Each structure stands twice: as C-alpha cells, then as structure tokens.
Length: 197
Image: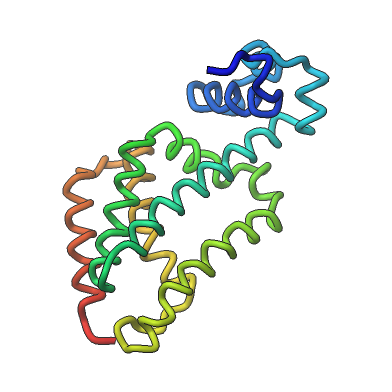
C-alpha cells in the first residue's frame, strides 16, 4: 500500500469525501472534516476543487458511471435480446445490493441543485452511455429482434424500473420485497423483449 504522502491530494480528497458523504450525507459534511480525514490542507482542497459541491459532483459522476457500466456490461454480454433485457434488470438490482451506500448517494443527490446546475456535463455523460446502448441495440433493431425504441424509452426500461423500486425502498413508502421485484421485473423484461417487434 502506498504511503499517504504518495497518493495524490486530489485522490485523497475524493476518497475521504466519499466515505464522509456515504456515512452522513453531503450537507452534514464540512470541508474541515474532509481536510482532516484526507490529510490535505484547505488550500490544497480548494486548489483541486472549487467547492464541496464540486467534490460531491465528481463522486456522483463516478458512481453513475460505475452503475451504468455495470448494467451495460451485463446487457452486452448476453447472447439474445431477451437475455440482455433480463440481465440488465438483474445487474441494476445487483449493483444496488452490492454497492448500497454508493447507490443511495446517487439516488439522494440526483436532484440536488449542485447536480442540476451541471446540465452540460451530465448531458455529455448521458450521451456517452446512450450512444453505447444504442450501438448495442442497432443491429437488433435492424434484424427485427428489438423494436425501434427511442433512447429515452430504452433507458427508462433498462435503468428506470429498478431505480423506481430502489426509491420506494429508500423512502420507506410501503417498502417493496426487492428480491420479488427483481424476479418479477427480470421475467417481465424477458417476456417483453421475447415478443416480436
């Protein structure tokens, strides 16, 4: 393991802030706490990031990328469209189960003002993953194995349904049986994409 002095200050700040944000939230975390935990001075922190929100945004983007890669990798590894539809749902729920703090952070901060102010950066991020999903979909659409869905409809099916279940569970509003929902949505997606377009 590298000594703390050999780890770049930016990395130490991100690592410390991630731990603190996941433990207590962005609002409850102070810059002083991030500095203490990271061993980085206040000046160095602000040299690398303009604000606490900029650190939180970097972590939000990191988590979102990791989540999308996890789901898209599972989808692309499947051999058929129904297999891919089922695999995408299972991967989304698996990420929630395996990375509960990261996923909760992504859900809790997705509508934060400091996220919403970053429209261009988030549109670019979304575009990269949308393009990847549509590159996967294109040959299946051309061969008639997949209906020609808009990228938004496709994304809502792949990412949206599992996130809606997670939001219900996170909010404590009639908490769903997540395992049952996983099985039901996986089966439903398989059936939906097994039907002829």
